[in-house]
Length: 178
Image (cartoon, rainbow, N blue to C red; front, side):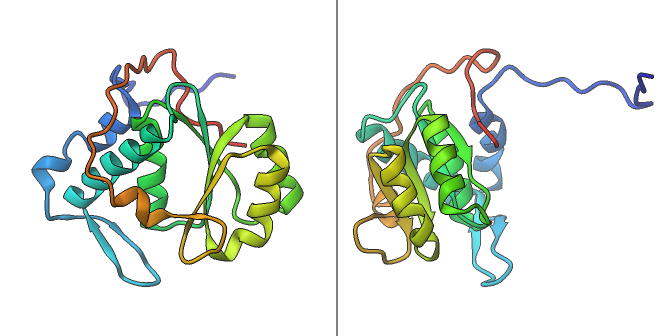
């Protein structure tokens, strides 16, 4: 049996997901967009929009673009959103890896999704680093100090503009959840 909502269908705009999420960021500027519960750290809409643009620019400078896959293996934190939407703004696809995944599960997902890059956190590196090597990931970017990785802060340090990419929302993939 098919159930229909008593509410009208929603219209999904034909715009890239990162545009949809950030379309009102300019007008909301200094208002909180993301609040990290454990630390209380707040990211405003303006900081979110600028951070997404910087991550997109840094990824684009690495040759990451249309059809490339970024693995995202981190807990809920403001940088998750920056990496997710930054990858989309660069024209890429994101595969989100469960924080509880084993090293073997992480390696399988990265390999199966053909991930080029992996963004993670220092406490996950015991699983992330060997999984990334096994899966052929070219660069591991980590939040927090971690030897052998690129600091996430370097993505945010760029002043270059985000790459100009053509995204067709009805055709181009945004996320590969497992």
